[in-house]
Image (tube, rainbow, N blue to C red; front, side):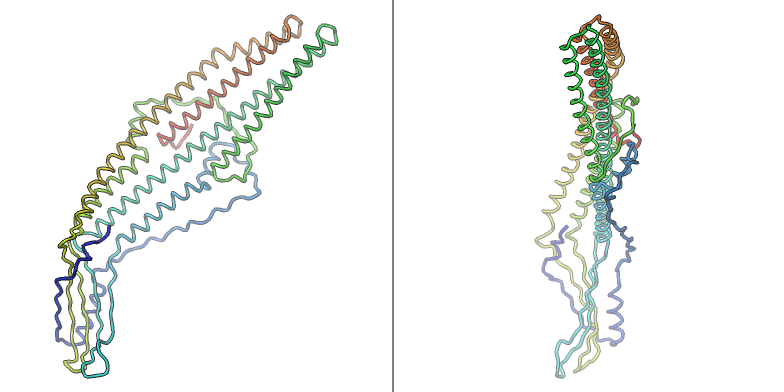
Length: 444
């Protein structure tokens, strides 16, 4: 906060030339230089060392979600920037608590005659009304806000990594499904070729089944490309775009907890780091209002010194007191602004809570819908589709059904299995969103 009051004209200057011993005056000036200078223990600043990327390395150990999160916490530049922001606020807090330095002036007032004067003076500003204490308190709240912002940034990163990881895992599962069904399609082609050679099938049947198998080959290549893209997105989020991932481990069928909205909402609106950051800003704004109120109370500047007068008396002591008068500028504008900032900070806190509750409701709704879809597909649809394909495959090989029925059964199973993967992907990404809002360290 700008000290406008200290710019007020110095109207209460009292100057006393005390004729005392020169040694005593010099001692007085030296003592004043150290009066009220607060000793501040400055914590050593941790070195923010540059992270060297593992050029040309292969992170084959990046096979699990835990590995991905560990690397992201180490290499992600956004998280490291948030840590640097915390360190910056700690430095500003140190600076806010420092007492003003004394001023030392020395030199001759006149030279070369009997009126020559030689003096040394020390001036010290004395801060009043606990201004430095309030500055330090406001700085501590700024640190709390930066700490909460770091926590928020970390969980945003964890949420993003978790979502990308399970998106990549779903892409991997799609590749596996299409590979299995492509193998089934080529088995059907071989069966059609044998039936054609035996005079039981036609060339048209064989060609159509071959076309279907080749289309599955194309779908498999597309799925592999999408899997590679999801892995590249994952390493980019981690902060290591140069690194390749060989494979990923995990099971999309792993059960997840049932999130209760009422309990989760209570936790989010009270404990989420965004709420903590906004609450710290409310506290800081209130402290800054108190600081603005005491700003007009003037600080006192005391000057003490020793002067040697050639013409005599030789030894003189100098003592000056100075205070600015808050006649016109009483910091009234900044006080009004500080009150408005408190109101804004309180409303911002409420808005953050509203947005978090809304985001939680959306995430839990998506999670519940995806969970129900997964359960419905696994219990009711998938077993039937697999059974239809098995029956149709056997019947076709025995010549009881034509190839169109077989193709239809294969396509149905593909669609069902892929829809299960899609539902599981939505389930995991929604669960990651909920975990991020609840700021859960352990997931799943």
